[in-house]
Length: 469
Image (cartoon, rainbow, N blue to C red):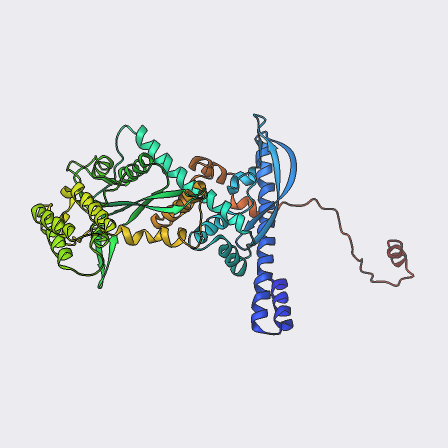
């Protein structure tokens, strides 16, 4: 501690301004932390090695390893050992949870992925360099994002497998009403003229108010670039793992596009004893109306909109035919025909779900939260010349999903190849008392000393003392 205080005093005295002082102190504290943590890890390695030797493990060699932590690179000594089955291990790395060839700490990997989900890889590298002791390239940022996103993806896949192999459904949270919306969004792929579809589901329990602000209650997201079957399998597995929907009324909303039809929702939420209510998304109806009639207000547009609200098919047909008779240009007729086909194909789904439920909850609102939640994807992954590989796109949306659901860190740690039983067993190896225990050293005698003389140097005792010098 005295050495640290002395060094800080020298930094403050020699710095020309407070900015330089703070930067120098920050760098010095990084050095101190990395040195201390490295010493602790090295000491822990010695304790674990001795314990493993007592179990019959053999020492093969000692190596040095450097791991980049958030406060700087930590260099420590570790021992390669061979167990009774002739398998090689680094017991210290097993205890710490460090993978083979891992060069960044778990916190660094997760933080990099979380930051990269909000800004570009280059900006992520620059921000880390400015605010932490982590210096990495933008290529490394992409690699770490794929690693962390891959962990969340594998966690979701395991959840699907567990549901398929389960004898009965897990006991989940019981709710009276459950809401689900689904849609897709396209991003540019790395292959020419090929886009990737990100399938997105939004699950929530209702709405809650905070003053005048209304937000979704317990929102959860499922995002993936998998095919339709894989996407709905994840939706079903997540819902079945967290909710007991047997007595719940499920309300769903979509645009009716390929892969988001009513039967997909019915299959995903088949555990409910009630038919799944599926309505056509009002935003897409309004969007189609604007494409067919233009953004300006007109009599035909108002009458068609009114017929849709009252669900009057005859009135709708009359006004669509009347408007079509006024059109001369072929593109305008094609747009109207597209809108007519879309509406008639989904006619049975054009309603407000609150009119289909006998007991409407007090906080009931219209559905349509998906479009605003799609911005989590579009703001980060679209425009600005961005192109995505299949692996990079899947990793990015899984990181997004993990952040929104607060599952990213747990999924990452769970995929570090250490089960709960292994962690408990390894932690028992190193006790705090062992780390703090200082072994006694064998005495080698006094290295320097004097013998008192209470007589003259010419006496016999004085001459004896001189002989020892």
